[in-house]
Amino acid sequence: MGFKFEKLTVWQIAIELSYQVSLLIDDFPNHEKFILASQIQRAADSVALNIAEGSTGQTNPDFKRFLNYGIRSAIEVVSCLHLGRKRKIISESNFESLYNQYEELIKKIQALKNSLK
Image 1 (cartoon, one colour):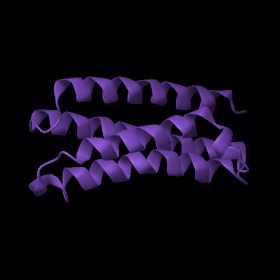
Image 2 (image 1 turned 180 degrees about the vertical axis):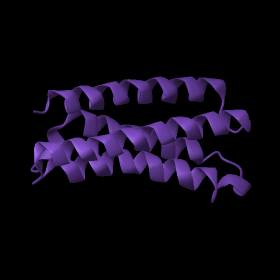
Image 3 (image 1 turned 120 degrees about the horizontal axis):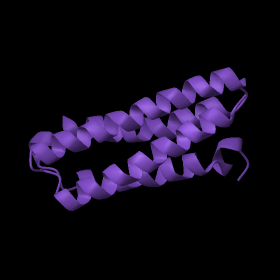
Image 4 (image 1 turned 120 degrees about the vertical axis):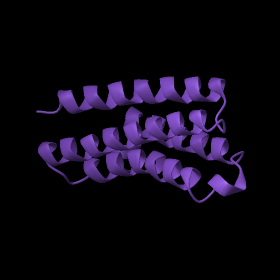
């Protein structure tokens, strides 16, 4: 791995969770494909993209700003999970699994942010 962000555990987790979201939305009904499915996938992708963008060639304050964007995108994913569960297109078990994983990811991103001077 040649880029700094590729070594970051939070980026690796965000990539995996984005993949899990893509598997989840494969089962969404057609009427949600361009609504909730699109929104949750963009938000999930945005977590990893912001971590990557902020990690390379940025000052610590800039990196912190991008990590904040990543946290906000992760919270957007969680909100989409709630919407999908409410609309009965995300099962309780899928909701709980992804919810818990995003909760942990947010904590890890926050810890990384707090470790930067």
